[in-house]
Length: 244
Image (cartoon, rainbow, N blue to C red):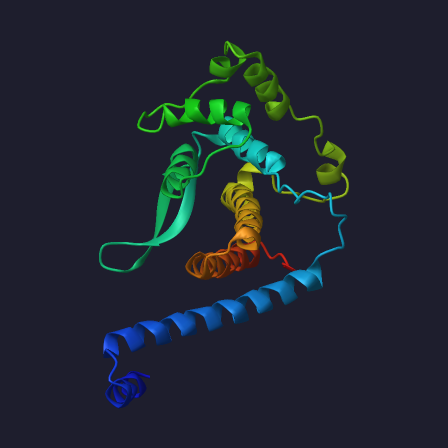
């Protein structure tokens, strides 16, 4: 392409820089059109026909937000073991307090809660991030916000328990949530992030529909591709099939 521009510049006596800029512009436009066509085909294959008045679907994250808060309420002070590497590069086990794992992860990825009550509860845990202690149940049941008190009581209540007969008579043993804390924690956090990514994809595609600027369209298409890669990674970690 550079050689082509240089030869054309000499033949037509036109500034080579101008030709290169114009060629690059046409390449971007071509890529944008092709990518938009591919995106439209993918959307058409998975979308339904909506009436002209229909509004774009809003991807909510309510259940997953409450699950993250429930894990914090019940196990904030528990140590969770993860596989890691020591300073010499050898495999080792790293123990992290559950509260610190969640807060550090949310801070790194700039995550927040859409549910205002969940966000208020989360902020209490953030205040204990550098402390050796964790908030007690009384910190929440005595909270001035009634919505916080009600949500905490609802989340820490366990309405169902496995019958003692299952283990004593039928010899069926089921691990408790605390015994599988690491896997359950990752499942909850990954599910939260997966739902958030799905919403970000929906918002990104909505912007793409209304964009008329080729450079912006290209940026949105690249962002769409990156988001979908992340969705695939979290879905694989959760053993889920994504049809998007």
